[in-house]
Amino acid sequence: MTTPMHTIRMAALAATVAIAGSAFAETMKGRVDAVDNSAKTVQLNGITFQTTGSTTFNGIAGLNALKQGDRVVIEFNRDGARYIVTSISSH
Image 1 (spheres, rainbow, N blue to C red):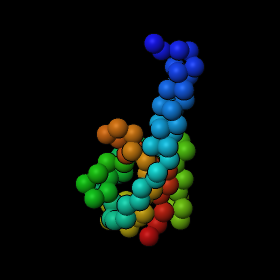
Image 2 (image 1 turned 90 degrees about the horizontal axis):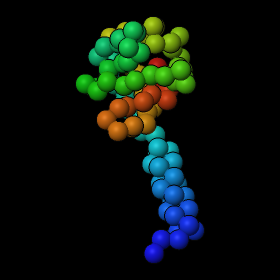
Image 3 (image 1 turned 135 degrees about the vertical axis):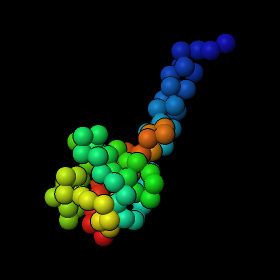
Image 4 (image 1 turned 45 degrees about the vertical axis):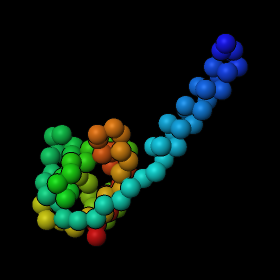
């Protein structure tokens, strides 16, 4: 039998796992393959990364300033099949 307290504990555990899973940022270095300003994406090493309003740019004026061939370091989190950029730095 499931008690209300058991349900609360399971919900808390699920929330903790979800938060912890998204807390591990990953990093990738390379040369920019392409930039799509209208979609707010940058492609690096064949992977398309999605920028957001929270994405920070270090040593770069912004997404509009990036061009093919630029050397960058991208920090990102995975959200299912999407790669969400937390920061882009010149390299």
